[in-house]
Length: 294
Image (cartoon, rainbow, N blue to C red; front, side, top):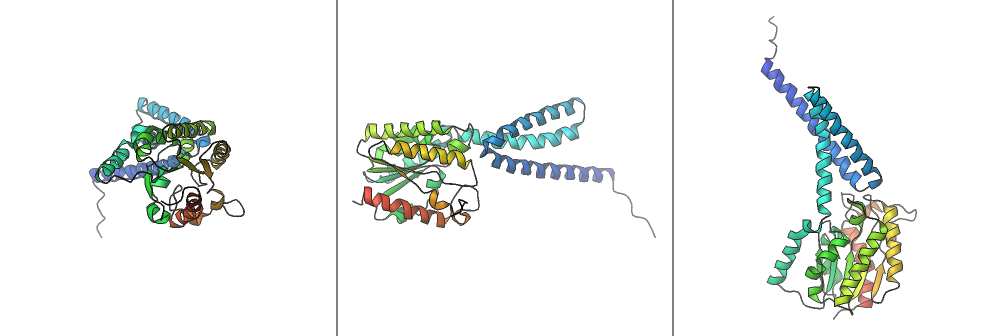
């Protein structure tokens, strides 16, 4: 019986490179996912970035030692961490959301909203509220949520997506991204940003009511900081005329203080239809009482 011939050298090299590529790919995806989670937990993320710096240094050392295999593997770990972190850093700049703001302005030119509507502004939890108009009927509302927008970004774009409508009321949900994304602001900074928002709106529209929806508990981010910020904003709101804090976070926790997972989508940040139904049940009665339909 004739023995099978051994693989040709070229085939063996191809297989080895394929295995190396797959290992590096899976490792890169793995650290990318971990980094995505770490970004929302700054107490761990800073150490993670320090470890990344050590990995890059080690890769350089292996390159100098002419050990490219080890260097390539280490770089396959470092690159996804740097890319994911860079994306979040970029999202922290207001200019990152320029295209979404421009799209709203273009839509307004084609179909101008009526003045005196209620504007819902903030981050992706507002933007993803696809049933907002139906949920809030008979109230006239417009959705001006924007991606992973921070409270500072709402301030930056307020004169383009809030005040032009001369709204009777503004409902804002933002702040969790400020605390959870680089550069990880403090609760006091977020409070100051809300104070700036109130001053901006009431400086131009003194009769407009402002409603701040509390930051929701979620697997993403540091709930301790969010809860602290909620309490600070609630306390400030009680000192201001035509400013009201709407607490949705308590209803999103069970009797044991644990997260009600049935309210959330597949990702660790956003709600499903049940979550938005809960928000409607809490927010709409407040608006009906304080603002009413026209």
